Length: 258
Image (cartoon, rainbow, N blue to C red; front, top):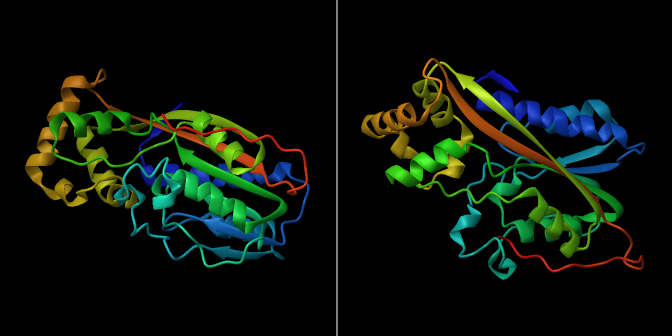
């Protein structure tokens, strides 16, 4: 599906999709934790759905000021991860996260969510898939002008990670779209102004350099098949899993990130 380009609108739409999927659960979540992005709309959507629930939002890292990529091989070495939240174990019926997984060590993220959930609790997340802004990532690597630091996990690996953590019955599915811009300059402008640029790039201020933007535009012009418009790939996957009581029959598997 192709739609008019807006990364912010894409993030908001993903949050709506994420919360709408909760309608399939015929339960009342009394205590909810939202691990979200800056300007996240999910807490408000949840409050409309469950007005009597206690909804808390992670604000310690809500603007992602601590990048998990600072630790070497953080995707597999959870000993180096530093993601912890100031809540007691077993505090929540639901932990929900919209597009935030990319900015934390995946293994540590999963284990912390597992710790925070009560037995029978639900984890529901959306996350960027490998094709998210892949044209931009390739341009960064080819031109070496920008440091594209986002390490995006594949949905199948994430499902394996949830199983390895102790979650049961993980269900994952993916959605791919294209955002349409009039030209690459319009895309770079909206991306530069978004919170994602600050989190996905090691040197986001480089986008303020006119020469860098010009080189990126030239690169896109050489590789874009439709010169009359600029199409950007976006991919997101959704995952849901349950924390079952420790005395239930659960199978654990080893997780290795690619």
